Amino acid sequence: MFMPPLVQVINLVLSSLTVLAQIASIVLIVALLAKHKGITSLAARYALLGSFIVALIATGGSLFYSEIAGYEPCKLCWFQRIFMYPQVILLGLALAKKISDALIVAGTLSAIGGIIAGYHYLLQLGVIKGSCGVVGYSVACSQRFVMNFGYITIPLMAFSAFLLIFLIAVAFYRTSGHESSSQKNNP
Image 1 (cartoon, rainbow, N blue to C red):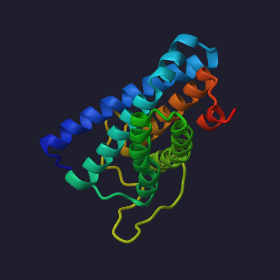
Image 2 (image 1 turned 90 degrees about the horizontal axis):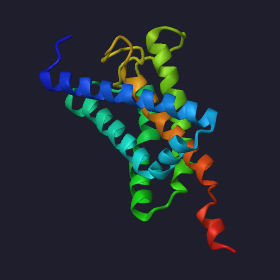
Image 3 (image 1 turned 90 degrees about the vertical axis):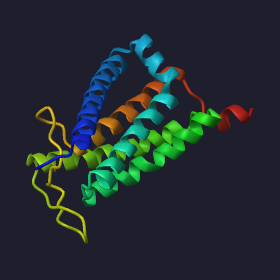
C-alpha cells in the first residue's frame, strides 16, 4: 500500500512514542510492584501533565489517521475514541485547575478503553477469533493500516496510551495517600 511521506513520518513518530510508552509502562509496573518510591513519586508529581500529554498525543494521532491519512475507523476504533477523546478535555481542565481527582476518572476511562484496545489488537493479529464486521461506512476491525517494528498497529498504540495513563493514575494514588478534594474541604 502506497503511503505518502507525511504519513510515513507520522507513523514512525507515533510508533516510536508507542515504544516509549511501553517502556515507561514496564518501568511503572516494576516500580509499583517493588514499591520503588523514587519512580512512583516522579510519576505522581507529574501525573496530570503526563496523562494530559499522553491523551493529547493519542487523540491527535487518531485524528491524523482518520482525517489526514484517510484511514476509516472501525467500530472498535470508535469505542476507543469514546474513552480517549474526553480525557484531553478532562485532564486539560484538571491540569489548569490542579484538580487531581480527575485522575480517578481518567484511570477508569483508560482501564475500559485499554480492554477494548487490547481485544482489538488481539483480533487484528488473529490471536482471538471474533467478529467486528463493517458497520455502516466503517472498515472491518481486523484491517491493519499500520504495522511498524513488526508488531505496532493502531490499536496497540491506543492500548499503550491507555495503559500508561492508567498506571500513572495508580502511581499517583499509591504514592500520594491521596484524599479526594471533597474530603479535604469537609472537616
